[in-house]
Length: 194
Image (cartoon, rainbow, N blue to C red):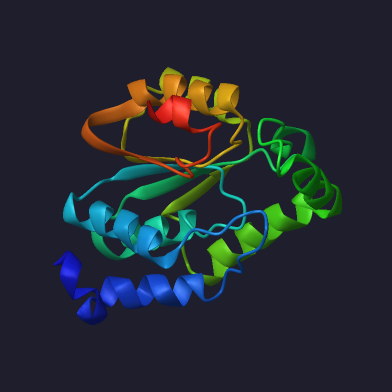
């Protein structure tokens, strides 16, 4: 199935969703990755998936449409939408550019735009945006004994933060589930991959 993306209705749906979400310096899930996660949700009939680091929703919304159209499940997206939490220090080459980007970004507006997109795509029953730090959300998910079939780690890329996300969320991964990590080529993310 994977090699027939051009004839897959899910692929077309994901492309349509991504066409409504801009890519900028702050992030943007590539189409192949968005489709791959959505495809896994459908193929494995995953009922709960998790996206750490929602930003504009390019990785969350494709998961949610896979749930809406194929599994009846829910995609949970965790993002505090906070400039303090978004600041990253470990990538020295990008540190100043990241700071400037964060200073210019209206996180409340971005959060509101993601919720509006969720409404336009009729994803109310299949998408939950959790406006908390990943650490606080993990505590809540664990207390509710929640497990996820797919977890996408794409929050703050500082080493300590990525390591903490993997430490907190790996126990919440359902047996046989999928852990997807973003930007593993970054030196700050590689220790978590290792």
